[in-house]
Image (cartoon, rainbow, N blue to C red; front, side):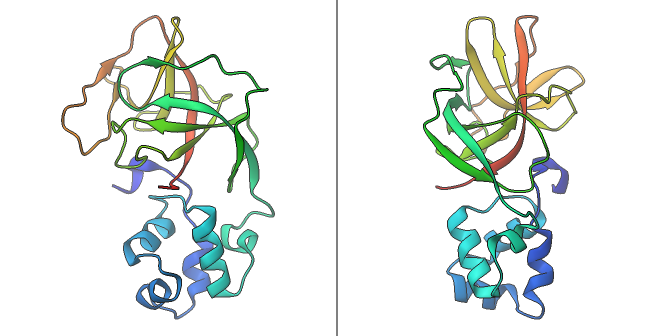
Length: 197
């Protein structure tokens, strides 16, 4: 399971706990033990609210906690379907709805999209936000991407190489695998999921 989501773990969290158990940290921050464990392992990216709670309890800055001098501001510009291919309005850089903060992001062309649908709810429930690098189109088996077609429709899925397909990653068994077609292009690789829900 560790390679499934491939999100950035909060490496510093385990070190900063320094003798504080997960249970004690959970009680002090009102964040569940399982959620803190997911943050440490990289299975979930913490919200800014949770980052502040954890940093406050551990008496460090948020920047120290995430090991980044400053979180990058990423424009949230639209939504993307986590289900069937669906069209949203065309996205332009001027369409920034708000700014979200991504941690430990390397250089790239970053954009955030809100998730609509539950085909990826094991890592990105409806309403959560994905952060994707629009410059990264290198397809890696088992990683997560946004794909689109010539009709302006797009979807967020897990890429599988043999045969080339887009797989749901969901608790809902009704979602189907999409096989790549010539009209489909990779719009960018998803590097973080921000769960605000």
